Amino acid sequence: MTVTRTFSIIKPDATRRNLTGAVTQILEDGGLRVVASKRIQMTKEQAEGFYGVHKERPFFGELVEFMISEPVVVQVLEGENSVQRNRDLMGATNPDDADEGTIRKTHALSIGENSVHGSDSDENAAIEISYFFSDTELVG
Ligand code: ATP
Ligand code: MG
Image 1 (tube, rainbow, N blue to C red):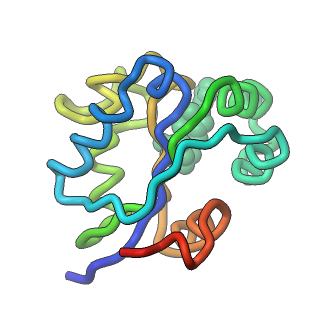
Image 2: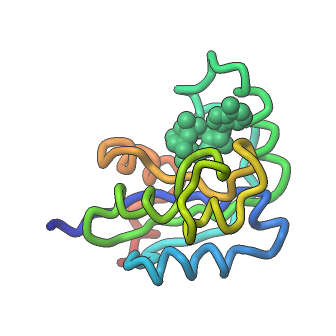
Image 3: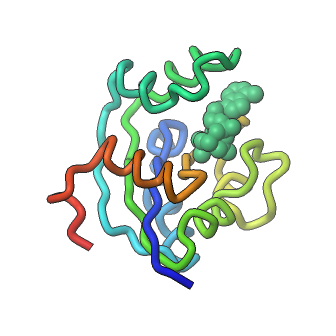
């Protein structure tokens, strides 16, 4: 197993309900280490760029508006097989389909307001980390 990094966002539905700590606790208990973290207000341009792969999807406008509706917490997580580990801890996109104990089963409100984002591949993790963090912010 190799130690890798992945990218996470604690979304507005979770920051609004004061769940930054609760979500982070699940990540840490699950074996991931927060090696960078900051609370930001995403701009519309940032959100549209970040979710560019979804721009043809019917929910794109709603997704962008949601992601800029309140601050989010962007994080870099480190651990063995971190991309898959994080996605296991997050649970399915739709909280109704998520396993017990996952972040989305425990905290998400709906398929849109689903509390967290996590990278889906090592390649996208590297792209997403560099979208929000400079090298000097990744102190390990
Ligand atoms: P994420 O990319 O946020 O980690 P994911 O990989 O589980 O989540 P994607 O298919 O990449 O899911 O969708 C990106 C995000 O778009 C979802 O997390 C969710 O917030 C939103 N989304 C996806 N499907 C829908 C839908 N049918 N209706 C509303 N929002 C949706
Ligand atoms: Mg995704």
